[in-house]
Length: 188
Image 1: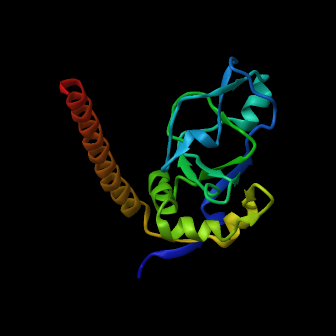
Image 2: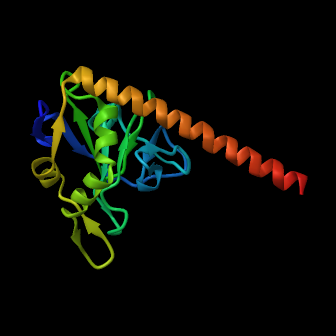
């Protein structure tokens, strides 16, 4: 009851599209694409690269804590959300929009987990307009229409800490299962 309900527009300080420049197999800066976004995290494989002047790079540079929205994709995959939690220099492709949280009032891990719940993923999908082969989410509508319950920052941090601990335990468990399956295959 004591959590305020706010629009995403009220808690993000900045939003920007990724680059629409052509990418290559090699280059100075790695470019995140929609295939790199999975289950709220980033899978850093199959990267594309781009060479940009420093001034141009700064316009697209992702910072740790940015929330990424896959605004264009098939209807089934549009609206994916991932947390950019890397310390390296990256930019994203143009069909990904980056939102920079106001860190004085918003924990990035908390908002990433919240926006990846079934409830919010379904709500985000309602914003998608269907085209012939692609669906698109208007980034401005995303910030204006989606409202979230916002607990105090300390409470968000505690929730994020608990969820991170559970995610780490799940990852470890999955890894152990995969290792046992490989051992079983080897023994067979």
